[in-house]
Length: 412
Image (cartoon, rainbow, N blue to C red; front, side):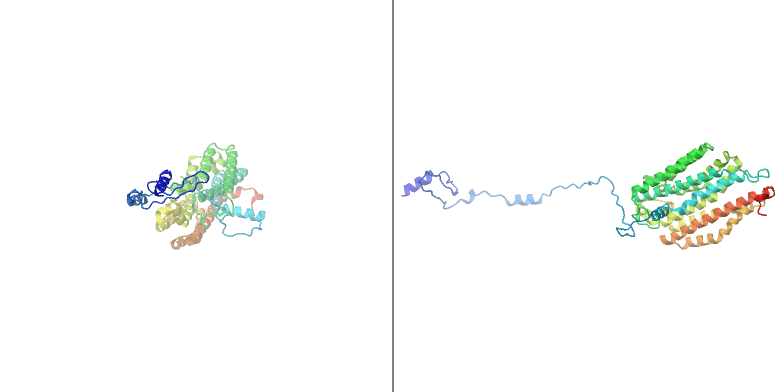
C-alpha cells in the first residue's frame, strides 16, 4: 500500500515541492487524490522587505496647478431694487432711466463754454453801425446738440469701461447706474455710447464744412478725448491726465471752436481775450472733476486707478480744490476791478453765498455721501457763475449801443 501511495504521488503533476494543493485529471472511472504537504520551509516563502513599503509611502506625486481661465469673467450685477418678474417698465420709465444714466448734471460743463465763446464772437461784431451784430443761430443750435451728444456719449462709455475695470462697481454715488445697478446690459450701454459719439461726430463734421478748417482739428481732439478719457487700459483718467484734459476741453478748446464757428477767423487780440476768459471756466470745471475724484477716492484705490485726489490724499486735495475755486474768482477780479475794465463782470461775485457753502463744505466733508453733496454744490456754483458771466458780457456789449437799436426792439 505504501508503494502504491508513493507511486500515485510521483505520478501527480500538480504536486509541487512546496506542497501546493493540486488535482490530477484521471480517466473515466478513476478516483482523484489530494496531497497535502506536512511542512514548509520558511525560507522558501517569498517576502518583501518592510523598508520598501516605507520608501513607496514617502513618495509624493508632483502636482502642477495652472489656470484654465481664458479671459476675465464679467458678470452682470444684481439690481439694487428687484422688480417682480411680471413687471414691465413703460417707455417713459425707460427714457427716464437712460436720461439719469447719462448724467445730465454734467451737461452744462460742455454747453457753457460754447455759449461763452459764441457770445465773445457775437459781441465783437456789435457796434453803432451794426447794433445787433452777426450771430449764426442755426450753427449755435447744431453745435449745442453735437456737444450734448458727445457729452452724453462720453458719460455712457465711461460707465462701461469703469465697470469692465472694476471701478465704481459698488459705488452707487459715482456712475450713472445703468450697468452698476443691473438695469441695462453692458454691451447695450456701450452701443448707445458709440451711437451718441457718432451723432456728435457727424454733426461736428457738418459744422466744420461751413467754418474754419481748424474746427476739424478741434473736433477731432474733442472726440478722441471723449472716448479715451476712460476707454482702454491706459485711459487718460488713469494716467493723472483727467484734470488737465478737462481744463483744456471745457475751457479754451470748446470756446475757441465756438468762436471760430461764428466768426470764421480770430485776431490775436481776440484770441488773448478768449484765452483769459477761458481760465476761470476751465478752473471751475477742474474743481468739479477733482471733487468727483475725491468722492470716488476709496473705490479708485481699490481698483488701482490713480488720480490727483488719490495721490494727494484728503487733506491736500481740499487745499487744491480751494485754490481752483479762488483762482477762478481772482481772474474775474483782475479783469473787472481796474479803472478802464468791464466792471459789470463783477456781478459774478453774487455767487459768493454759494462759494462760502462750497468752501465750508469741502473743509468738513470726508465721507463719499458728504463729498457727493459737495459735488452738487460745486456744479451749482459753476452754473450760477457762468450765467452771471454771460449776462455781464451781454450787458457790457449792448449798453453802449442801446440808442442805436431799432425802436421796435426797445422795451420803452
